[in-house]
Length: 434
Image (cartoon, rainbow, N blue to C red; front, side):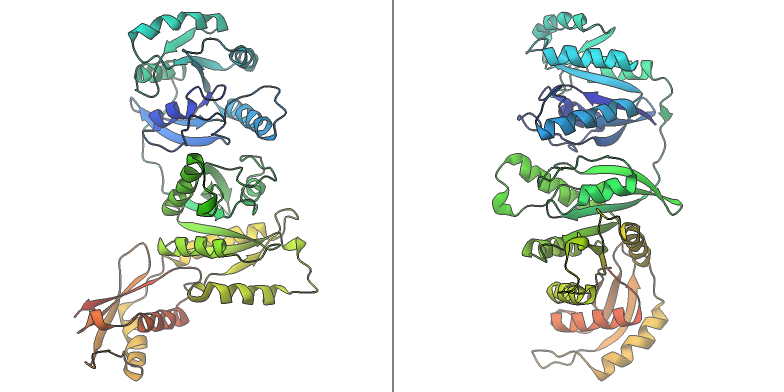
């Protein structure tokens, strides 16, 4: 698909326009400059053609601020990737020196450029558009990203300057793997190492990634979408609205992925927040693998990998079926092994067990260890089958489904896992009236 990059100085409305194009709220929108730090990708269709659109952080030339330098670099990457550029400026603020510098940069790139004069909310603001022809672009349009005013005309112009946009068609259901964890555990570094490029901003400041960033990766002969998510903070530390929305985007990324890679920090150990992330992933029925990053920093004389894994499993308790892989992104150790494990787990989550095999295996076990009822009534389980579901789900038909205890439910789940390799895959056991 043809690609459009939206760039501009901070707080001119780039993310609002991005959300308008894709028809959702994928990019965080806040009235503070510098909210969007990474390149955010989305797709949209207009007049039968599909396009990829990139939202970028606010471009601040020559800044010495660590984030602004990284944002500038990411914006330059986006410009290089794009077939056309939408340069967004602020009608109410007038021409800013940064607008002029950006215009000079874009002219040197020899890219097709649309100048979108944003915040033209009504006719009376149209007169402010004319001054922006000074920037030297042929295609200048007044729009309101917030209200949607003239954004359709802007997209019509996009089709004119990029006539070869791909015809609309269904996007294949690719394997989606989310990389999640606390801030500063190495999520972006892990993704960048696999991609072989700096797709996400990486600094040693926790919380650098605020949005969830989708990247396409060809691995072992198949296409994978890697979702690099914002680091999850403790609720007490989410003081700004942007931090809240960042955590929300991460939760949404977990919901839309097929499998999750949960990164722990080996140098810190397992914290309560790590366990909460695991719990959230399992509650949403997502298969997962734990990657213990920064293993190179651990003194191997004081603790072995086997001992460390045993300690993790003890903390995971009922989720101890999640596999653990020790990695070092810095030393490039076992990174591909971790991704391969995530793919294997995703495949095993699709396993289907024959009903006859289930009954032959489980009913004798149930007969030897029947469920206990607090009311003293006899609970009879006569039949079990795996039902159609995204999460492996097993339905047990009984005369008293409401009286089967949680403990017995876990007993049956463990017995199923002993028989079938559902490593890293949450399964559900339900009881139905026979």
